[in-house]
Amino acid sequence: MAADERIVFTQRGYLPFGTTSLSRKGVLLTITTRRLLFAPVRVWGLRSFGESWVRAQSMSLQDVTALVPAAGARLTISSRFGDSVSFVAILPTGVGFVWQAGAAVPYRDETVRRIRESCGLGEPGSRVVEPGDGGAST
Image (cartoon, rainbow, N blue to C red; front, top):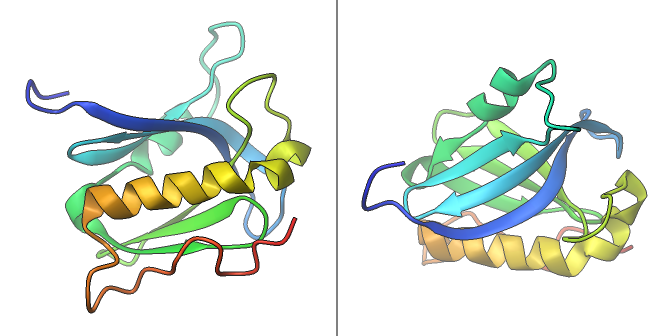
């Protein structure tokens, strides 16, 4: 991290398999003053398969073009390069099971708010969707 870059917000979650609710990889989403960073969760401190792929999902805040909340605690972040990353928030404490995602909708909404605030999304002409939209039923 650059000397003038600082952490603004973090949220535990996972990157799902496509449109399913199954976890591909547990991650920690960290919003800094410059980037959205995805760091893989390590069990017992051991490296696991796919860590470089998880880190490659990170992006500059300037590249974020859309943020769409979806059902449960899922949100999709799109970049100006046409890439998108689905992220599902989980409860901030405890083990972090996939089935806790329904209870994590308020954490998803706070994550959306923090990303919007950091990226300047939600201003006139942006394509961001307000938290609570997108069928966020539990």
